[in-house]
Length: 165
Image (tube, rainbow, N blue to C red):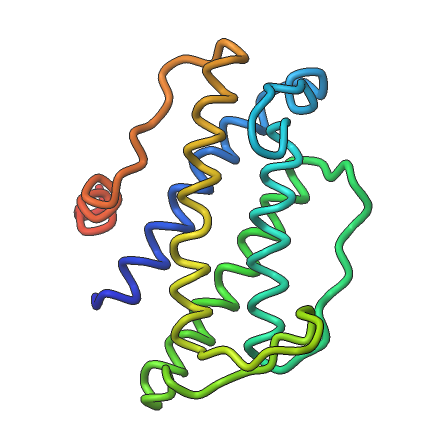
């Protein structure tokens, strides 16, 4: 397991832990304005997952996929998250293995379009979710959710390396 596996694997796992909490919340809590960032748990997850999809598509040179109409169910968010994190990991692994981190892609969403490095895009996606997970922790606490997971990389690694029973 190298650094790429750790960065992207931990990010996917940590976000999934919070999605697993969100799936138990009623719509009133998912859509409650917590007064921070994107205001609600649902909008924050829609943003994080939408960003993963958008940037993965841009780096792969594909049209940016259409986002489902909001509000998305948490079960749909989980499906989208599982799919895009697998796509990103496969793409990033191909880029690293081919020594293409300094190759560029065109961010067609910028006006005018801007050339960016694949390595920078991958790092952006590996770190972007943490910012919003911190906001989600605040939102969950505001909603009275207790026993939140720590979500740190060392816990993820220990769980991943622990032999199955």
